[in-house]
Structures are given as C-alpha cells and as structure tokens.
Amino acid sequence: MRAGSAFLAGVGSAAIVAIGWQAGVGTLVSALPQSQAAASGTSSSAGTSNAATPADASSQTATTAPAPSGPADGTYDGSVVNTRFGTVQVQAVISGGQITDVIAVKLTDADRKSVQISQQVAPMLRSEVLTAQSAKVANISGGTYTTQGYLKSLQSALDAAGFTG
Amino acid sequence: MAIHSFETMGTMVSIRIADAELGEHTTDDNAIAVLNEIEHEFARLNEKYSLYRDDSEISAVARGDLSLADASEELREEYSRALEWREKTDGAFTPHRPDGVIDLSGIIKAVAIDSAAKQLTDAGFVNFSVNVGGDLTTSGNQAADESGWITGIVDPQDRGTVIAAVRLNAEFPAMATSGSVERGEHIWLRPETTKEFIQATVIAQDIITADVLATAIISGGQTSLDQITQNFDVAVMTVAPDGTLQANARFQELVAR
Image (cartoon, rainbow over all chains, first blue to last red; front, top):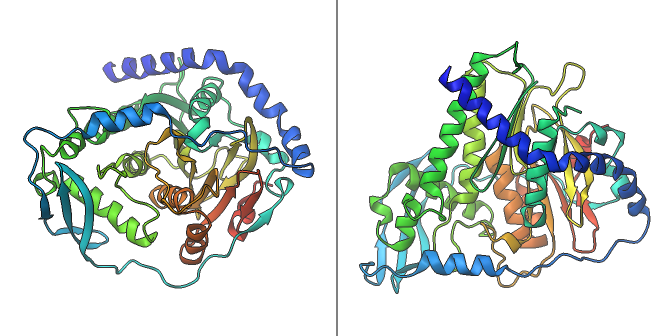
C-alpha cells in the first residue's frame, strides 16, 4: 500500500507538468506534413546558438575549485580494475589540486572490433526517413541542447495523455 | 499500457509497460513494485554520480578529497568502462571535462536505463520502453497490433517537428540522440573540431553503446562518424547545421513504414 501511494503521487506531479503541453502534442502531429514540405525546399539556416552558456561556465568553476587539502602535484597510479571488458589501470596526473590528465596504462582490448560491419553514411532527404507511421510515435528522442526541456514536457504530455500511437 | 513518469538526473524518466495496466480498478502490484525499485535505483545513482551535488562521491573525487584508488569499486568500474569507450572512439568520447574533472553523468544515465530494463525483465514484463530525456531502450512491442516501438526524432531546428520516425526492434532496441554542446553536461568538442553536426542519433543493441556513440559523433564530427559506422553495427542519422541529413543503410531499414 505504501508503495502504491508513492507511485500515484508521482503520476500526479507528472500530470501537472503536462497540462501546459496538451496543445504541444497537437502541434507535433500537425507539423509533420510541414517538415516533409521543408525537405523539398531549401534548408533553413542554422538559427541555433552554439555558444556555451554562462551557467555551464559557473558550474565548472564551482565544482573545480582546488580544495585546501588537495593532493600534491604528480602522477598517481590507479588500482588495477577488472571489468567485464577486461583489465584496466590508469594514471591520474594531478596539477594544482586538479586532475589534468588520465592515462590508461593497462587496457586489455579484447572487445575491440576491427571488422567492417556497418555501412558508410549517405545524404538523405527528409521524406526518406519520415512516413505516415510517424503519427504513431510512442517515444521521442532528441539532442539535449535545445530540445531537453521540450522533450521533458512533450514526453510527459504524451504520458499523461496515455498516448500510445 | 501502464505509463509512469518521474524526474531525476535533471531530466524526465518515462516508462511504458504495455503488459500492465495502472488504473483505479486494475492496479498491477507487480508493476508498482518494480517501478518503485527503478525510481530508487535512479535516485541512488544520481546521489553518487551527480556533480551538482556536493555530497556525491564523484564530487569528492572532483575536489580531490577522494582519490580514485580509494573510490568505490562501482565508481572505478564505471570510470574504467568510460575509458574503454574513449579508446574505442579514438578519444571522441571522454569522461573528462576540459578542466580535468571526471564526469560520468553521461554514461551513468545510460547505465540507469539499462538497469531499469533489466529490472522490468526480471519482474516478468516483456513489452516496455524506458525513456530518459530522449535516450531510450525498448523491449517487445508497443501494442498488440504494432510491432516494436515507433520512436520519433525531434528536428533540432524546429523542435515542434519530428524529423524521422523509426521502429525499434529486438535487434536494435536502444536509441540515443545527442546535440551540440550548449547544455554542456557531458559532451565536449575537441579543439580541432568545428561543429559538423548539431544532432546525432545512434540506434544500437544496447543503450550504453548508443549513448556513447551519439556523444562521440557530436564531439568528433565526420571523422568519428566514419570511424563509428566502420567499426560498430549501429544505425546512425546526423543533422548538419544547414539541416541536411545523413544516415546509413541500417538506419533506413529501421524507418517506420
């Protein structure tokens, strides 16, 4: 019973997040023909920003400030670690209280594939990768840089709507 | 279809179980139990590997308070796994930020997805998807009359649009999509790399492979794309800044028709 109530609370909060995105589901579906149309026309220019955000810079600063009791500069051996991929040992180079490099000193590479098993990529038109079946999407995948917040909301909206395609 | 969503690791987890129903009158205790276990495992991994938490083990390593040799066996194994992937991608994927801090958040998210799928399988479910911020793995079918799981890929230049839709199946059940570096969580461009792709999608047998390789393609550009399609059995689609697409034949085979 306890587990059940915790679970239901989670569903409730997701549903609240989703309220603002009900319209978004409709937009997604109705936009599909538009993207196919775009494929035959000229590509739009890249309007997205590539710049690292100030937030990124500040978070780095915050997490990498040298600790007062940090390690002395030098190269440190890591322990030998057995993994399912083989045996691994690394050396960490410490400078100014921070790790400045990590060198793999022992890597068994039994898993490395050398055979050519896949194919080279080739240019494609959008009409080749988008079909009427797109209306049945149950999940959404996207890059994190601008789509994350969108995906979060959209997926929760699809979920709240019980959208199964 | 039971659908459960929760937030963790700065993103949204969405789990769909086609074999179960969760409603007022049809409560599936087995599904509720495993979903709670999954939430706890995500929370545990987040507490341990989040650089946004001062009390995480990875933050202690980043500060130099904890040496790698003294870190937990699990952390060292995950770090070793990440280093293996650095080798396999000729350095395009790396667990190190430019400032030297070890950041395992990318690979840990994939590990958590993988773990959730195993938990669902162990609980007896066959038809499900686990989607974390747009990276997902699937099992079985999304509906009795719809084989596999149809998954849309968002257009990075028009996020209200799906750019492609593929059908994930038993051979290629896992998909990850990475974008350019703005969010800065775990992808870092090599200095010599211009931004050749604004988005890369990789579909693979497992989510860790898919996630790492999608990251590597964004980081390493065309060179990494060519290396990866030569050496790994994966389906790939990329989006260039001018909106043009590239995909390999594997990807075309998976397009939902």
